[in-house]
Amino acid sequence: MEVREIGEGFGSIMVLVPHEDDEILMCAGIMENAVRYGVKLTVVIATNGDYGSKDGAEGRARLRESLEGLKSLGVPEDQVVFLGYADTGMPEEESFLFGLYHEEDGEKVHPSHCGISTYGLPEKEEFHKENYGEHGLYTRNGFRWDLKALLMEYRPAHIFTTAAEDTHGDHSGLFFFVREVLGECKEEGYEPKLYSGIVHSRAGDENWPRRGEGITAFDSPELYAEGETLKNGTEEEDNRILGDLKWEDRIVFLVPDSMRGKCLEENRKARALAKHVTALKPDAVDFLYAFVKEEEIFWEI
Image (tube, rainbow, N blue to C red; front, side):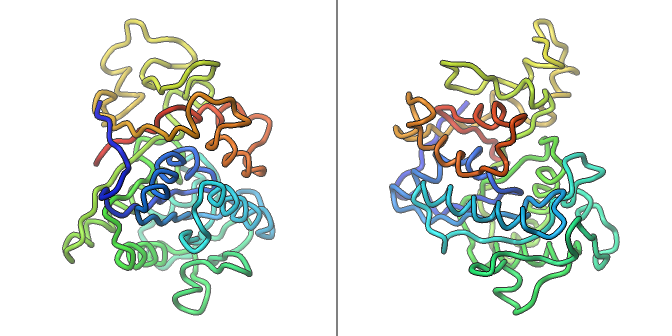
């Protein structure tokens, strides 16, 4: 384990996540420290979180909730970018980004529940519309081109995103796209540090992160399998949980004082998360608030 700090001279940061609320779950403390120390910060949300929506209304609601949550951490709207792509489900076979990544026809359109092209808000357009004057079709080439254009425009020194080992297809799919595009960027002289983190572990959302009063740090998802503690877990069982990542190689970023040792009502991370009303469905509340800990963890890729 290594502890790192976000402070003056850290270098510019891009928080690049699949859905609204992932930026808070993974990086609220990192973002607040970036704001506090004047570190250049950009927050990018790849999809509109519009799973099941028929007209985009839920997606637009979630975009506004992200803006409100980020505003509560001191991140202004002009530092937030919407890519405006679809959200079609969590399993890999249903996931929009996972399916898009593995699509062999780069120009094939992947329709969502509510459309075939990117969208943002009337008051804040998505990246493609803002840059090219029209909405972008839901194609593999379109997403890859938007992502590369974004990275080459902002050129952050550090990128925080989701991991290949995350069980949500959009989370792993986004990582695969980022890795692919950064391979092209490297050939053009741009090579940032890449950090990946887990939201949905193979231990199951019902098990990890661990809930409970007084639990202020993350423990390894390797400890859990179907709700049972692996007291004598084999290496094969452990690898099933974390894949290629090793728990001892994690990088810990401690959250600021505003997120430490406080009840949820006073905790700034919890208050930012509370802006995500649409995501906080009854069956998700305990899971989402389990990320309110005194650290945020990543692996450098």
